[in-house]
Length: 414
Image (cartoon, rainbow, N blue to C red; front, top):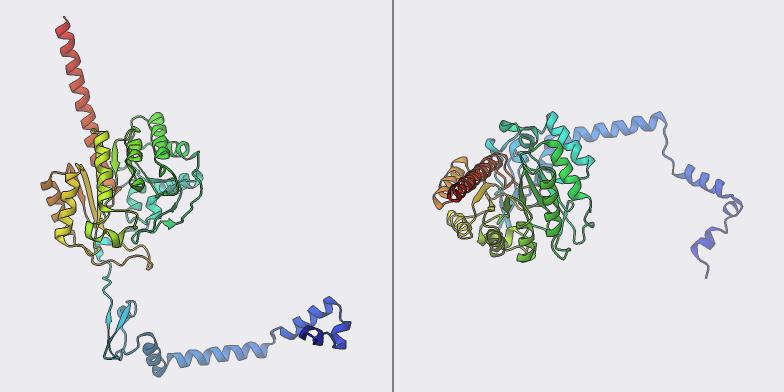
């Protein structure tokens, strides 16, 4: 039996044709005419289609296609909202809006801009560094990078790349089971960038690296030591992961010379399995914070909670009480913001008055500092300014006590 290609090649024309002629024949056979008449014909068809779509019948048909079972005409505001069809007894009865609240005015921020913003971004790209400010789409990036009310630029450096081995439902950082290998020059580049900006307070964070035996704790520690070598006056806060629950890794970072050890519980205990990656746990996070304080009692420990995920007041109060039991010094509470449509929806936008309530409650529980507000984030500029002053005053008082003790010892010797 002959193949189709063999039958086709029996044609005298094709058999004698050269490859160039064959290509030319196929090109001529499939080419679109560029004549004026065909162009005018296309335009007229497009015009007719536009007229049909503009008619009321077509618009009604389009509305029915987009929102089956909805007989009313959509307003511009409704058209921008997702809708769901309610089905009862196998029949479409009505459509209702999905419970996805609109963004309130108190959460709207300016587009990032400014000379200092551009300078920091250029330095970051030049040294191949990443920031959680960009990766997590932080709403405060313009204020922090631009200087803000305290006129001090702040950027939270994200170590160990921009790919995380975990996939929390609230986080927009890219996920990869096997991220790229660590950059051995990153600790040096990070310390160089920070020395250029002339900061008083810096925050280091990282993606989770469950692919590494020590979770990247030694990389963290090396970066901190290099910063302290180049600029001893800089106060360093580290926002770490849980290192898979390894308390030895927590100890490595806690003893590296940092000033503030931060680790976020993110949400209340009841919602943790639905909000965070399955490898993270509420109790595991508490053990990280507790261990850091045990091995380095002078450290300030810090954690953060997102509100608006569906938590109750009782659950928030329980989370705050558990943090105090772990001897956490500082807590921040902010509004969860949905980074993309692929992430967990916002359950509600918590009012500024409610955030004020939790600030008062946190102070009553005995936290040394509470930052609570819709735009507050774990690495929060105003909080860092306050903590910076608190640490400086603490060091000054320790220095005064040491001076008094030294003077007392000298007097006794005489």
